[in-house]
Image (cartoon, rainbow, N blue to C red; front, side, top):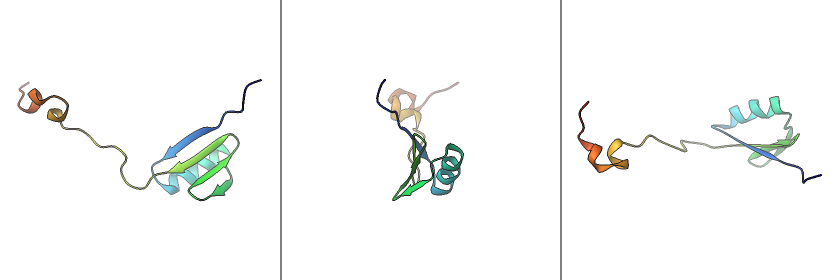
Length: 66
């Protein structure tokens, strides 16, 4: 039998993390996370990703026409 697996879940904000943790049964609160039932649920505050402008990926795309 292999080692137990813990699944990490990253939520966009604490309130969403609490809702997800409740559904998953992660009831043990620690600083910055909720854990239990094979899950660790944590959260971010603020944006983690953003959209890139086309020219940031390919300079030739700065002026394109459809």
